[in-house]
Image (cartoon, rainbow, N blue to C red):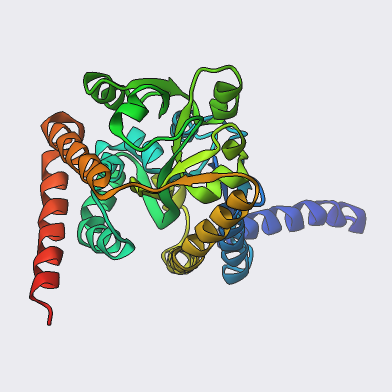
Length: 344
């Protein structure tokens, strides 16, 4: 056998051996990439908090996990965002309670007017019900990474609103898709107009709506106060939200890295809890300097709003909010009230 005939098979043998070795090497997991959509305006505190969380995800996991934010409603209204998450177009979202309620009705708890009177009450109820909220999300294929706080919702309107009759004379923005809520408002004599949140400005410009319930920070950043230059000094509800991701995408991340992502989520929560109330105050001051009029309420007017809110809550008990969720929340609030009464 000649030397040339011996040499010929060697390259093929080497390649075959290398291929076999490559096939038995440990696989390197592809980076987990989360595309996260939100209505939060670009450059807002919520957009910034999401981006900061994403930067920490990348840093703490050595780029094994990344997060890209799509802000400002570029993915559509929250119902659109949830639908796009379900089909895998997005792996996550920063949602308000309205969007979360598209996933599970338990989150409608946070839409009952005047149920909470302070951040402390809200935090206590969230803490008590968190395991149940998370279980419900998991059953629907989602994981909560962090809670989000948007501020305290007030009525911004074309004309001053002091009484319920004042509100009934104006057309009220209600989130599109909130059919039960629309029926509740109509039954009580109001004029709800369901629209996507992305069309509020157009709604004002075309006369479709006269009133939008929103936070001072949102009213300023979205410039809604220009069409609605009156704010009623009555906190209707805290704007609660959460950052959620698809469960299947989450489970592709290692358990060790998941702990790092959750830690970054807690940092987002703490940042918003500290900064959002301050931003609401600063936003209100800026809008007042630019012509916003704050409508203060007399004691009897405030009492009338409270009675109406209690009636609204009773209707919610009948069919809007799951009974176990509403009962647990009310029990916690009653416990807090009792503790406050007995405090020295």
